[in-house]
Length: 212
Ligand code: HEC
Image 1 (spheres, rainbow, N blue to C red):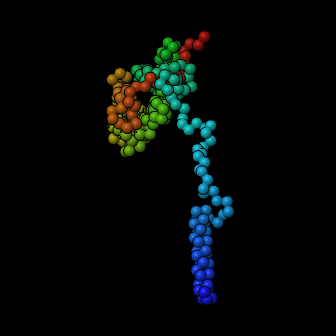
Image 2 (image 1 turned 90 degrees about the vertical axis):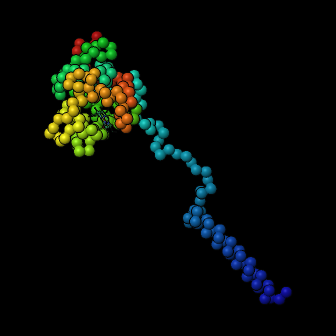
Image 3 (image 1 turned 30 degrees about the vertical axis):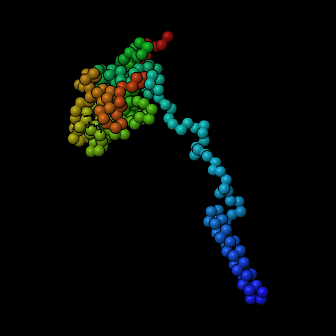
């Protein structure tokens, strides 16, 4: 064997080993970057983005549980409260009377009624608020109905503009035949509407005679 052949063999070997080193470093840097503590091969640690002790959802409202709506001490089905308010003439400020589920005589005002339109997560767990669709801007509000305040609720639906009144949703004082009860008790295939009257009981109003 002469020197030339030997040189060629050595050169080939060196180039080969060098090539392998470059290739391995390329893969390493590609995956790990310039670090000596690459953890790419380690198993992933599954972590929730928030501490697990923080509840991930709002408190779930179970039908039959009472929800604190007004700061009252009387407990009443939400639809019965609305009904009593409508039957009494749907006043903005005057108190109206109702009988609560424990047969207490109670009174409430529109302040106790309003959260039923304005609060989300109230009629059932995760429910949208009525005002998320029925808001003040009548040009885009669903059914041109504004449930965000007293004037809106009593001005009705399908209104042409802010100054006009539309279709009375309070049944002219007759709750049972009102559009409001009708749309609360059936979803009418409207996304966001309630499927059936949930047995939602809320805290609202105050007892007329102090509780013994
Ligand atoms: C996701 C949006 C959305 C939410 C939330 C929503 N609505 Fe509606 N609502 C609509 C739409 C859209 C219509 C019109 C349906 C139609 O044209 O038949 C409607 C119609 C109505 C009507 C009838 C108006 C009419 O003239 O026909 C009433 C009353 C009503 N909603 C009350 C409520 C109440 C009360 C709530 C809350 C408990 C509520 N809506 C929540 C979208 C919504």
